[in-house]
Length: 159
Image (tube, rainbow, N blue to C red; front, side):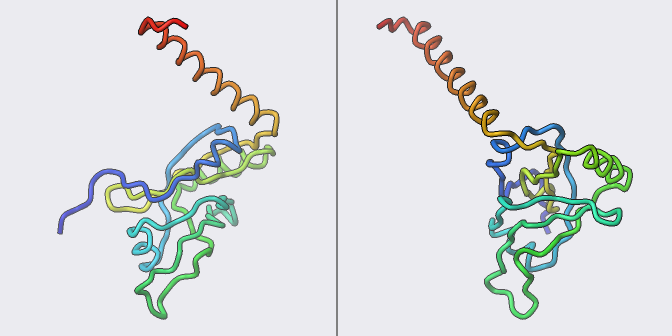
């Protein structure tokens, strides 16, 4: 059997980068059932409503939707069940201490297979206010306009 190598992205949470300011990103494993893995290999998952929490010294992922496997029978999984994340206990202690500071949350950014194993990329994030989102949008737009003007002048097309 050929072993998988590389990284195959299944789902990304693009809205998280818009709604939150990302402070720290880390990777962790995820405990899945057989039908969940088969459904993920078909490229089906949604991270939009997902979040992670520390509960009794363990890290849990909630709100992530992995649809039922179409060829599954009575062994199929519940699509939005809580899933345990595989992280060292020292990291969990650090994360729980940071979460107690207030205003921070754990948001999933992407779900992928890395060398055949399902992994999830979590971010320690702080929610953005509406005016912060607008400022980031205007900043991005201004950057695009500057790049457009620089490239236009470089090619010699003056108005």
